[in-house]
Every structure is written in C-alpha cells, then in structure tokens.
Image (cartoon, rainbow, N blue to C red):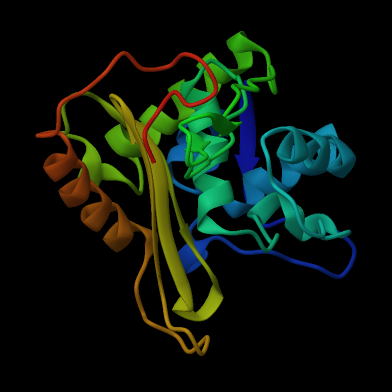
Length: 226
C-alpha cells in the first residue's frame, strides 16, 4: 500500500518534511525510514489521535498528551528513560518494560523488605511488535539511522530531530541492549545536531556494550538492559 509523501494540511497547520523534500506515493516502510512527516500526519489522522495516545500509554509514556495533530510527529514531552522503555517493549514482543534500579532490599537480619516483582503486561500484539521491528530495521538499513547499519547483532531504531535543531535523538535496540541517546542543551538553545548524528553516537556506544557478557534476552519484564 502506497501513501502520498506530499504537502498536507490539517486545518491551518501545514507540517513539512526536513528540507522540504517529498517523494510522492511511497511504501510505509520507506516513509518511516526517511522520517516523512507528512506521511506520519496522514496516517495518524486516518487511524485517529486517540488510538495513538492509547498505544503510547500502554507502552509506558506518561505526562500530558498533546490534543492536536502534532502528536503524529512526537510532540509529547517525556523522559529518555520512558521512551527507551517503550522501544524495549517492541523488542520484547510487545510486552511492556518498566525500568527499575533496585531488585531487592534486606533488613539488618538479612530478611527481604522489598523484592522487585516482574509485571510484564502485553502492551501491543506480538504481530504488531514484529511489524514495528521491521520498520525500525528499515531506518538503520535505508534511512536516517544508517550509521548503525553495520552493527552485529542487527540494530533497530529511530532518529528524531526537533525544529531548529534544538534536540536530536536516536532510540533503539540491538541484541540484549535497549539504548536511548539524546543530544541537546539544558537551556533549550539549538545544537545544530540531527538524529543522524545521534545515531552515530548510539552505534559507538552499542559497539562498546557488545563487549559485555550477554544474557538470555527478550523475556520477563526486562528484556533488554538499559
């Protein structure tokens, strides 16, 4: 199925692609790989904004969801930890991942006063998670995340760049690891960086992590180390 990568308007809002580049009717896989804003908006308006919000909530995003059509482009304030956990759920066959720092706490006598319990809920269907992995793989093979294309095991992820170059990020997973990289200034001033640059940094970190001992992944509520 082809989707039109061309200028689009939702009311008075007219989102544009990076560099005002448009490819015309293209497959969704290519649109995702090339970060087509106009295709994302068209799809989101077709499926419904409420549906997008519901899925984001199930994947662990909190905070106030934007009410307008810009939700299609990720205009939703969240933390890098939440976003990375959402991607880890896609790696985990659609089962939600809840980051935590403490597994167990004991009292002075050695008795457990707190033990972390696994709480992995099915956030999205496994077949949908598999389709998402295909799209995320396309980003690293043919799209804006090509800096991670040669990693082994295979890398999956997505770039992001805010208007004016204020923020740049790449979030994804490879093997036993889910990782998010964000680039930006604390005062919100532009950095000039793009998501492609964040992908290069992400790939370098992943190569270093690849030297660590791995464990059986993609099970329970913590499929990938973060």
